[in-house]
Amino acid sequence: MRLSLIHSTSYPLVFDYIFHTDGTIEVRVSASGYLQSTFWEASQAAYGTPIREHTMGSLHDHVINFKVDLDVAGTDNSLLYTHTVQEEVIHPWLDDDWGQTVIQQRIVHEYIQDENKALLKFPENHRGGYAIVNQAEPNRWGVPRGYAIRPGYSPIYNTVVGSKRLLHNANWARYNLAISRRKDTEPSSSSTWNLNLPGTPMVDFHKFFNGENITQQDLVAWINVGMHHLPQAEDVPNTRANIATSSFFLTPLNYFDSDVSIDSTNAILINASTEGAPSSIDEYGVAAVQCMPEMVPPYHNIKLKAFALDYALWYIYEVIHDRMKGEGVFLDQQQPTFLLNFLNEFSSSW
Image (cartoon, rainbow, N blue to C red; front, side, top):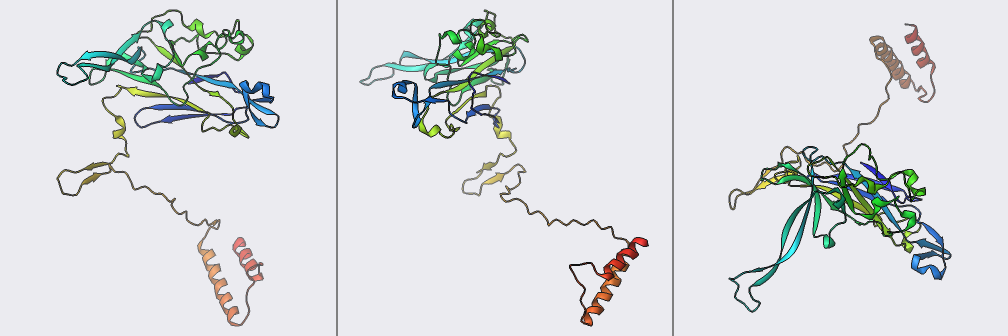
């Protein structure tokens, strides 16, 4: 995955890629570091928050764009928009004071075929979502296999739209996500030089979208994460990464025939086959969890190479040592003794 930054300055960014056992990929970005600040005066209260006697944390946005090249069961993919709508239906069997009319919701599946209509924002109230599917590759139940793009923490897009300083150089930041045909000539959504060229940027994201058909084509998803940073005193000394976090999920949508996490090696099946009888437990060969690390044996740095003569010389030393102890004479254990020096020289010369 490649990414573009609209705002970095003094913020270190932490990128987490989390792979779940059901096939879901979670991409999370967390910001920390020093808050963007300026001089505080009361007339600027609409644009920030006082965080010290003469310092203000400035209002700003963070938007980060990921390029995600998904190939779902092949490179021929389509963009599916699934959402719900409200409808009125008549249930003639209802016989109460509320009447026979019922307001309910139903599912609508819509394939977006025009690239120009694939500059997207997530539905209001998240009453739906978008997925990359392969219409020619159904699962066991006849449903096209796909991967859904779901918002995680803080699914935002850039607040400021229409500023001449962001005229064409950050078009990608206006949406939650966008889907385009994959092209080698469109490697990224922005460029280092875009900041200084708002009118004629090196990369104009909107030029990627020229009305091409995106049904069963090789597609690329451009997904934004970020946060609207309304500064507060708790952002000092460092921005809190636990709330300065944004993410998205790439999660299976009918890609499998069932939840594949049940096939993981850590699955445990408890089966109560007979009423009143003990349940059978199948751990699938999983070893018991070892919470404490295993003891490491003591380290001995032994560099000696023992041969028959070494054992003989050491035996002589022990005999002499014992005799001297019996006579009240003890060898010094801290300094080399004449006997040890003699044995070493004798061993070397041998």
